[in-house]
Image (cartoon, rainbow, N blue to C red; front, top):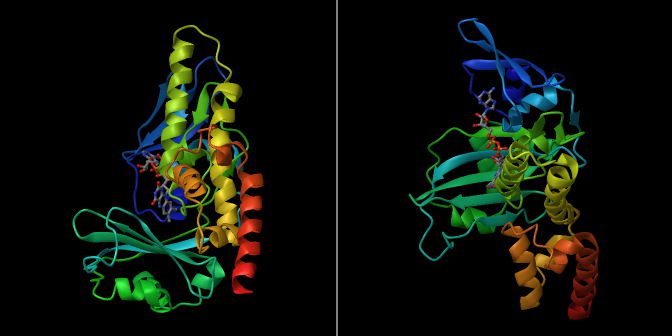
Length: 306
Ligand SMILES: Cc1cc2nc3c(=O)[nH]c(=O)nc-3n(C[C@H](O)[C@H](O)[C@H](O)COP(=O)(O)OP(=O)(O)OC[C@H]3O[C@@H](n4cnc5c(N)ncnc54)[C@H](O)[C@@H]3O)c2cc1C
């Protein structure tokens, strides 16, 4: 089962201690583990938090997996010695580039401090499978179709093997149960486009830690009200932006010629991670406000053309 998980996540990791079974029905949760020398042992704790990411150990063992609402997408990625010329990219920011013909195909270029970048592309499996060769060859072929990015990366040295990951969006039927909770990607993973994954993982850990602290202090904890609902609120805010991105409407907003500084500030704040700040009108009503904004931008674009 873990081998499946690792394979699904594209990981080459083999863990020395593998969780083979979990029992959460008793007074305390019990985890059964097999070491690589074959020895089996159990671990009992007061509470079980699953932070296993794409391995999704508890969702698999407890059959909590639920397909994501998002269609299956895949990514090809690697690290490069980027040699991006000074002034061609702000190294304090992530560069997101959209394919000139397919607006659901997009690239990330994430600069590191040492002159290297994480470089990747996201597209449907059908789109990505049109390209032949190694992961790096396929990635470079897609970049070659995108002149603005090809120009930025024209001197890059492709010195590392690439990797591929498909079907990473995932969901669960419940984020918690008796004596356990799912953190980060072990719960739900939306999409890499707005780098929400690490933000959501940290938020889930901080909410869960508070719940456990309260429980240990003898207070009653309602995991649905105190953990799942508040976590889901921010996830749903991100979800509205991710859906809007792939449906194209949010791209119309981002690439519109005219920007309201105030709206730009509110949206940037969410995408920077403040997706739980209900004082922000775009957090309070993300879907409705995005719909209105998209309509305004599309109408305005028509007026500008006319
Ligand atoms: C293509 C792609 C690009 C992304 N880009 C970004 C980005 O730019 N910014 C961003 O914020 N997020 C990004 N994400 C999402 C981000 O990587 C995850 O959402 C985030 O890492 C989730 O954190 P986590 O702690 O839940 O899981 P992880 O970071 O995956 O951590 C899980 C840990 O558990 C370990 N583990 C698993 N099974 C076992 C086991 N049996 N025994 C011991 N250890 C185990 C793993 O080795 C790993 O260290 C991207 C995701 C994808 C798919």
